Image (cartoon, rainbow, N blue to C red; front, side, top):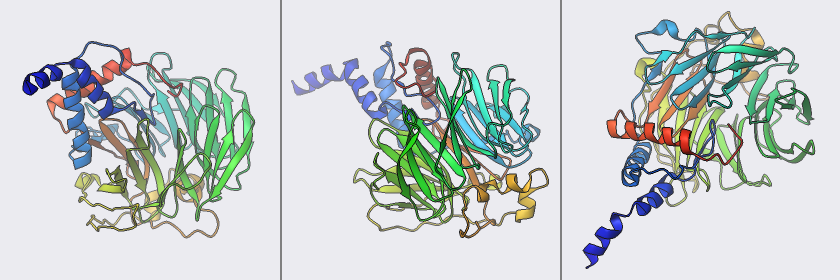
Length: 450
């Protein structure tokens, strides 16, 4: 009787849909929308099975190592350091010191069309949304300019030449607003229709990163502070000071996360009160991080540092944060890295080996293309007076991004490295394609963030 009852229950699609929804959650990838699958007739058992397998690959560190450009087409790649990277579906978009933006097809490893040209200096930041109602790329340059592009046609539609008085270090947009920050120590909130801007002032150093949702905006600065702002009231609500300069920040619900010069990731609540111990894993400035987010606290964080490593952080069932794997940005070794685990939140650690490699000198690394302000952006933007210089014998990780299936990161090497957690498994790849199609055609947006 029990077996018959269980068999009957196990045939119920609603059961597998609930289990699938629990396994996936309502996910927000920082570079994309929050979505739920709509009421579409699908094989929920298979979706649950393949989703579980994909999550297990993340946990176990099973992946393949694609790189952009494809090794057979090196001429399609950037010719200098890559500062910006964003993933959306199968299309990464990158921005470089070589003054170009490049759109890629990760399945083929090939460049899509010609590079986008228009910046007079380094491309330091970008965001894009390929969906039909947006079809937009916005990029920020070392000269303080913003450029708006049409994603599908790769055409330039508008330049704001003096958006800031110095380099634009970070930007984010939603359906109605564009927020930018700069080494000129200001934050600007732009109306996307009129391009009128309100200015937020209060930092005493370069504003290195911003994030926003609704009326709340967070910022990180070389003045060693993280600030929370009310956009509508045009005021700073709260400030927290960190030991050293802060390079990156993220906002999700009531959580604020930051990373900076001391090599730590920190988590705060909405009042900027610390939540748990700092996450120690890097030995140099944490330049960038992204997260796979659910309706609860973060489950996975990927961080990149000037120590040359990319860490994939997982939270265990006991609540400890662990860096499950270390990757070195070294195309010659194809992400040569050895598994390493640190138990963070209780203060204990388990050591692991990682490869070390000697890199180019600072002069060779910087090259003749960039001005002194541009080529030292990674240092000057994040190091207030008194901070010691970054060790330039390591490759510097400038940007990371992730989605359910992939991780991509860029550095002072002109190659974009990736990790594909579908691991070339045909069933998981087909599942990911189906899930992406369902999200695109049947998902219900829960947030205006593109």
